[in-house]
Image 1 (cartoon, rainbow, N blue to C red):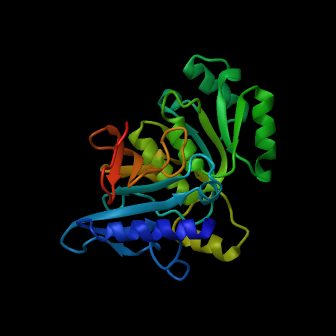
Image 2 (cartoon, rainbow, N blue to C red):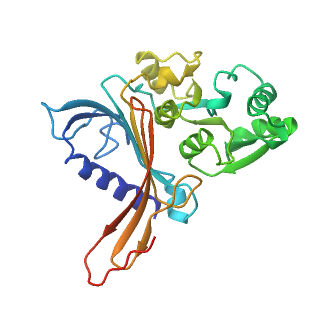
Image 3 (cartoon, one colour):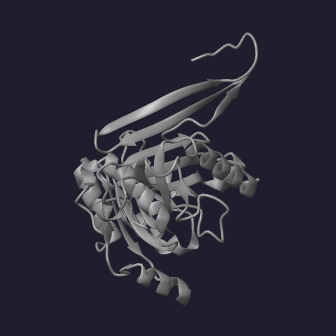
Length: 295
């Protein structure tokens, strides 16, 4: 049940935040207050005034369809920073280009698909035919897919979850070398937080919404539709924390695994200031006698 899964994820994350000693504010969440009962943009979370002021971007269940169907790469995600450290992105589409540390600074949204793929291949000391690009499987990407195929690169089409794909592009050994295409702008900001910690790169350009009211609202927020927003523009904070927990098994993280009287989770935790990347494997032992934990 896609909607029920998302609702449970939102409720669980919101309850957990109440226990955190922070004066938090949601800057990217489940929508405006009239659209979401909790984790809405502007909502105050944590223990309140007197504690550390934190801006928070969340996607309690990235890939609700993936979760509902048991497909790979559904994750629960949170990014946080000092106040002003994450761009308040409107709920619009964003054209994105994501690469890992090796190709950082060598690509551009203004370049052709072929030029970018050649630059990535050269940076990685590979042939273009050895490069894998992740693209959301949408009709709007038909031309992009054709351009990638013409250049000779491999394509991995995904139904949802371009955020987890962006993280995978910045981690060696995942066989994901780039992410291209149009996805959600809020997910672009959360991706930027992770990529900044991983020394990767995202470039994004907001797409004009056909809804006049949405465009006017975005322009009132200072959005420049012609500008290429880079990693530092989307996540300018110096004290960024990023966490992702696997819900279903994916390229980077194991999914939630249940056994008799226990649950096992796999989490990726990134901190920018200390340049730490941690994989946390946790076993939650619930009630019951003679519990056996196997590793």
